[in-house]
Amino acid sequence: MTSVDAIVIGAGVIGSSVALELARGARSVLCVDKGPAAGAGSTSASSSIIRYSYSTRDAVLTAWESAACWRDWAGHLGVEDPDGMARFIGAGYLNLCTTGYDGTVVMALWDELGIPYEWYDEAQLHERYPGFDIGRFYPPKRIDDPDFAADPDGELTAFYNGDSGYIDDPMLAAHNLAHAARHHGAEFRFRQTVVEIGRRGGHVTGVRLASGEELDAPVVVNVGGPHSAIINDMAGVAGEMRIGHRPLRQEVYAVPAPAGFGLDDGGPIVADLDLGQYFRPQPGGTLLVGGTEPECDVLEWIDNPDDFLDVPTVDHWETSMLRLARRLPEFGVPPRPVGLAALYDASDDWVPIYDGSSLAGYYMACGTSGNQFKNAPLAGQFIRALIDAADDGVDHDRDPVQFAGPLTGRSINLGAFSRRRDPAVTSGTVMG
Ligand SMILES: Cc1cc2nc3c(=O)[nH]c(=O)nc-3n(C[C@H](O)[C@H](O)[C@H](O)COP(=O)(O)OP(=O)(O)OC[C@H]3O[C@@H](n4cnc5c(N)ncnc54)[C@H](O)[C@@H]3O)c2cc1C
Image 1 (cartoon, rainbow, N blue to C red):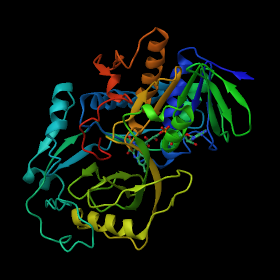
Image 2: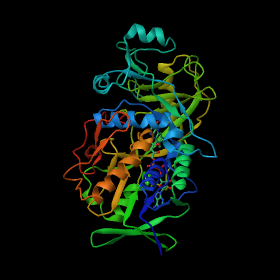
Image 3: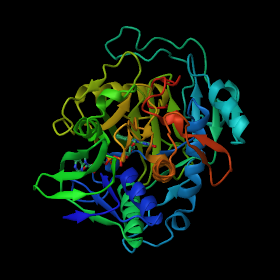
Image 4: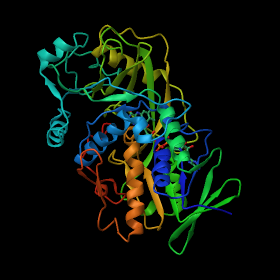
């Protein structure tokens, strides 16, 4: 029987990061994934935006610390991947301020943590981005709402951070992490599905694969992305979660960027909760456009993450395109949808769960809520810190582990990501 120190279920960007950090900690690691390659799950569909605009201090600090790893990717990995390296593209991040999302919480946290930004009043926003209609249309509406085309009732302000960006190839980023993990001795097995979590005397003992093979380990980490609730069920820990998490279908489109918003024009990443969308430039003169779960939109919760429509629908597409055309009047709506549909593993409060469990040796990095690609570098280190602390006899549920950010030296309370936390006060959307 195969026996290792730790089994990681899932080789997405976070699972591969967990494998790397555990291997760096001199553990023998086996990462098992039912898909064909590292990052082929929800990671491959990620918009991979790196921003720091979260509602809680620990979330902002985690993103800020992780960004330093993305900016020095080769340094973070410690090894060059011969298949190529993912790149951080510094596009900057513009957050439009509107009713219920006026930026005061985020800017107060950025002030506290020393994250630089500029604030634009209506005139400055218009001057810097003349291609915008800066009208305030809040609340977002469906296109069959008679008020969809109503006149704005004011104008928007915004804040801007120039250190934000995105990763040009999210799947390659996972591949890079897996390559680095292998460099430290980790093994990866693909097209292998975990169907059972072994348990004995309150301790995890390993996993059983669909092939019938049993893999032995005193540590098992669930990084199954949209499948992670199913895996927590297998481990018998679902009942102890105070924070639920489940798959949520999302569509993302690629459309031609109007002048001023493409990558070559210096177009920023834009969070537009006034209309319920985000968009970012990408190479080739296009914009990626995704949603921010406005109240008027029906959320598509998915029961079986192996069975959902993975292409855009005309209904969502039309809504998104007409919203975009309100903000960018020069935008010409393309004749047909180009894009994808994929799954978030959305938690109740849109904050991830990085935690252990009452099953000794069983850990989870899940509930990543469409906003944790950026935090993969630290998520791996968090899981390692939790395992190390448990090995040292720390009861994280009672005495939450504090993680010292390598960049700032500031402390991140890992209790903020506990499965047993009180739900965090957040935007209640993918913005976190
Ligand atoms: C459309 C979209 C846009 C996003 N945009 C952003 C963004 O702009 N910025 C940001 O920070 N985040 C974003 N995210 C979120 C981010 O991409 C995810 O949080 C992250 O990729 C999750 O990585 P993961 O490793 O946890 O999961 P995944 O990449 O889903 O990997 C999970 C893996 O587990 C494997 N698996 C599942 N069950 C089993 C099993 N039983 N046995 C073996 N293997 C199993 C799967 O095959 C899969 O490869 C977005 C997500 C989506 C879907």
